[in-house]
Length: 200
Image (tube, rainbow, N blue to C red):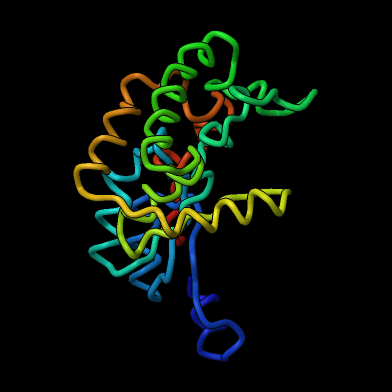
């Protein structure tokens, strides 16, 4: 952070952001130089950052960049309405393995019905839900198709009331999501366990 602060002072960069940072790392980094944004996984089926990172970021005035806002494509129908590509790495993801996926499909079906009620697609509703979490939350959905990009932009027009937001949350209870958010090898490096070492 000290080196990044120098780069800001030299005019070589404007802002500093962190990715997958622990609460302690965010606090210590922000004390050296203001952090502009923190990027973490955040979607309807991965909401753990609501417990610790989001409150801290709001306290410090840091923006939240939500990656995998469609749950690695799940809320766009990946492995539900369309097959996973042959050899896709998602086949080994705990939430997409055969046993868990069958249970998670129930969540997708429930959510898709809710999207139809709002006159939009499931990915549009998932993105709209995220954008209603606060002006400081910015989802970054990835896509390889122009059609999906255009469809994602349309989520900006989906207006949700507080009652709608509760109904959406109730349709995807975290307690009913089957499978860990990462496989065992990666999960030990998640933001809660991987802290930046103290300066020696």
